[in-house]
Length: 75
Image (cartoon, rainbow, N blue to C red; front, side, top):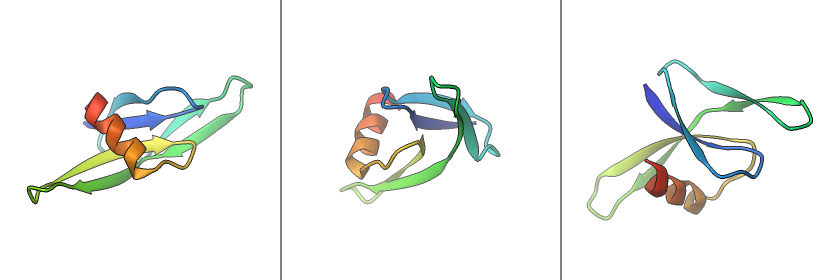
């Protein structure tokens, strides 16, 4: 299982647990329009030399700061 941070429709980020082979998430906007959100990976190096890999799906462009903040809060 992998944990994916989902950013959707300007709502707060949520975490979903999905099977490893899943590559996208289907979501529906309030108007009924459906969208497939691709699951992406983002890596963040740390000062100690190790790194953190985060899985993310979003319907908008995110900054690395937004992803890192959500990861620190939710994971």
